[in-house]
Image (cartoon, rainbow, N blue to C red; front, side):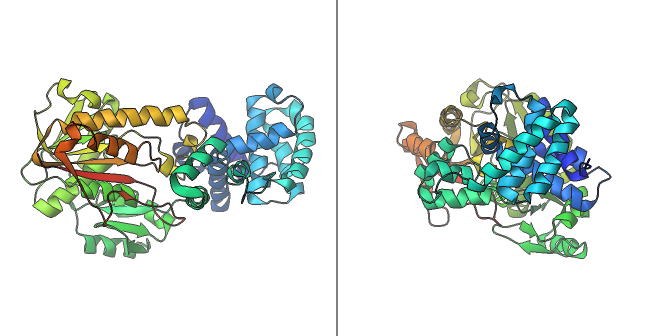
Amino acid sequence: MSKLTPARSLALDVIVQVDARDAFAANLIDTIVRTSDASQQDKDFAELLVYGVISTSGTLDELIDRNLSSPKDVRPNVRRALRISAYEMLFLGKADHAVVDQGVELVRSVAPRAAGLGNAVLRKMALDAKGFPWGDPAADDAAAARFYGFPEWLAKRLMADLGREGAIAFMDASNRQAPIFIACNYLKTGFPELLESLAAQGVEPQPYGCIGCIRAGNRKAAVDCDALKDGRAQVTDASAQRAALEATPLSGRRFLEIGSGKGTKTILMQSHAKRVNGEQAELYSLDVHEFKLDVLEGRIGRFGVEDVRMLVGDATNLESIEGIPESFGKVLIDAPCSGIGTLRRHPEIRWKVTPETIASLAMIGSRMLASAARLIEPGGSMVYSTCTPMREEDEGVVEAFLSSELGQRFDIVELDGQRFFKNELEPDGPDVHFIAKLDRVL
């Protein structure tokens, strides 16, 4: 009898708990994988398996179900174990004998009596996998979706929005490891000083994109560096940094942040306010969930943020929120969205999002934009931002607003010579973000 490798054992533990607790894979990797006694090589392979299996789970289930007489009868944990082997077959190209051998041990670890069934199914899967993706990805959209581990409906929507070539590039990049970007916190340090400190600790820092943004050449050194621990910097995607930069508060005017979450952009915007204006802004931070403001309050002190007034309420009806001022010089709407631009970091999204999800979130974004517009002072501005490439949530929302009676008060501010900022997803680049900047002119 073979012994289950530590990497696969760790991966299965995380995958089971992600489903059982409806938790985020990244959080469980931090608490289960990275704190384990396994070798670094095993930890890295376990992380690869977790992200890969969760990202492509629907495609993996298709392979599994094709080789079962009664797919619905398979116990959930047995299916989770089989998914790990399916991922190795379809996306890692591991040798059949090794995958089948370890697959049997994975099944045995969660259901000893199912080991025999697992052995038979895994051998069938190994043969079937040789014909994957069961069609020509260059001509068959369903085969292309399988090849990249995407739901067919989402692959087709991406093709409609980005073009077939753009969608293929997006799906391919979504299966790569996301790089680490670091944001300088000007409340505590300067950019040259931060670069010097990061370099001294082996981070291999490279200035990237917008002001204050750094790409880490050495991932492990970046995660462990002192600057993150003492608040001189924070890990933040480069495109998210760009959104915060465009939303830099105006000097002497009230600022409203809608959708503050855990305060990443709050910190970034106060950092840029200090860099540009010499002082922090009078910033109001709003979220619909009170517990998120508790997280924000617990974080901002470490970064030197001082002037934040926290509000809880419905951003689609801002005027009803107790304690909110009548007007603002600037507003950032960090709109709730499908998050499809962040699939590398959030693998759970891919098989949970639906067309109805996208439509619902686009409607909420539209209502938030209209509500915020009513509070913008003459000469003020709004920034509308999402982390999705879907046109329905992005251009569709903003263009519909601009064509409305209320939208006639606003003009688009071009970003990088374009009507909107929207980056393509590249293997070594940041997540996809959409940014629209609107100035009130009437």
